[in-house]
Length: 344
Image 1 (cartoon, rainbow, N blue to C red):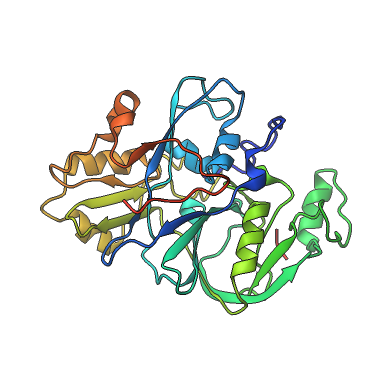
Image 2: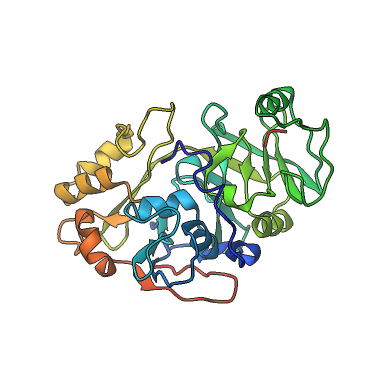
């Protein structure tokens, strides 16, 4: 659920951690008129004792994304022999393909390196309930290596209420909650950062006080690539959709971010935009499939065109391996390459 703040944080750490060497998933940009990138990965759970968080880190995705795509899986220890879908296929956000784009609803950061013809995709942690990361268009105003952390008065008060007395300043180093690198955003008086973390399992969850968190290897890579002044756009769009050049129409639906403690993001009504309503009114839309996609909220693209050959989402439990865009799990070193088909 998108209201979770510490769903998997307390789990016992495995002796081997997948996340220590993970890097961004790189995708070539799709052809003109297309927004579809990547392929989902079919992963058979071995008897190795790894948690869903470990598997998410290995395939450079987030925990909540894994739970959306595999809503019947055990969030602690998925059953050995069961098949998981790694959500590595997605629609690019409907934004300028420039600089950094963050979609809060899917807990992903997209970076478009200038002149590269590719997009790098990172899982992120974002602001928790009551301390949400704001929607904005801004830019990187400062790059900060080895940042210190000065907790705000509110953060210190909340921690003290939990029996934790924070120092006035946390020095740079392995115990710093900001990690080794930070990118300061101009808007908001500079209080919002894109930064690392000393709690890798917080990435992919709503856990921060408004900043955007990345795993250590990810923020190091992003920090080395972006320049001060880079454009940053933060959106909150649980529904993405595309009419592809081949005639297929795709919808990708994520659970919306909860706005209170009692709201269930799986069932809370969605608020389709006017443009999405026009998209749904197309004559070639499979209405039954469309309704199933909007109910299921699986977090990856599903074709909803009449006679598109897609497998209805409500049959996923029986026929998941036959879904379009699904490939077998494979490893390519520590970097996965996609296919083309302050606050704290």
